[in-house]
Image (cartoon, rainbow, N blue to C red; front, side, top):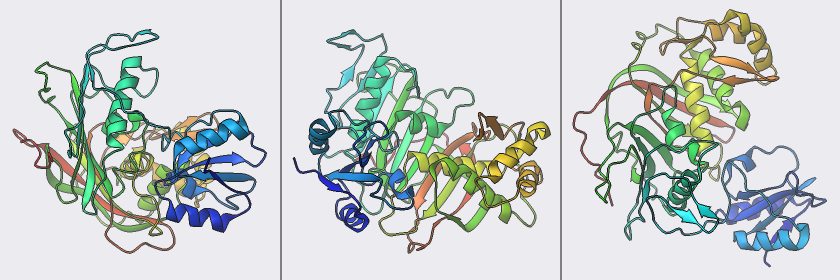
Length: 415
């Protein structure tokens, strides 16, 4: 067993993180209570958000292999440690290609046609076909199998310095469903390794023909592509809004949309561009500048949080019956008073992407962002080729109008 325990040794732990970027670790209370413990990839985004002492009272148990941590947990804790939901740091097993309705030793899996062929040797493309999209929760067993096939194969993609992950979903998009949810978030996988230089995503309408000649309702495609490649199925039109480098400070997972919204809403000035016509597709294109060289790159949580924050900054909240309470709750987590927050939420002059009755709605004792971004058919979050900020995260970007590219050709990066 080669797991190493860092207890009250922040410098040793940080040194290990810097020299073992592909390793794994368990974050667990020093009394070895497994209740709130989690298994992480060393590059997990959530680890970078921890404040105060890093190895007390929660210690770090680190190893190069998941198996070593599993052995440690069996011997010391006598319990299995659950993986982090952000980085999905669980042991991955190679699965045989799933074709058609599958079954396990526990009995038949509910019917659901799927095709997830193994990539050709040396290929940087992962593809899958199915009769329904992968749901975030309450999904049937065949969708769990399809998800595992896709994420297992994507975890093997290793981008070069000038490559980004290009993710595409084909088929009908359910109403009010975000494309980034369909192709990224619903997969329960961070995409932090294949997307370390950037993640580009888009909605491809017509499902490509499957290699077995059968017709399927939806398809998924993940490939390493040149940073400069752009979107495959969409042509860019006018720029609806743009913003230069904007400092965001430290990221906290639950605050990312609010941080982005406030920073961009505060800097809106001048004459806005004409609003986007209702029902018009658009893309959100963002560059991100990390605080440090070893800061984690883009991942699913970061993409979703930043895209939601950018879209929200150019929409308006119209429900004045809730805006006061929403602002009061947001003020507890943001460096702004409730009056400023409420005024920015209700401002319609900059609602270039339209207005939502409840851009932010009350949920329990907190809030949830709910931008109307179902016409956001493409987007990207790319690491900027600039020096780290040394302080906090920063973003720049634009929102552009899109039109469907006629007879979009197959991508040129099918290597």
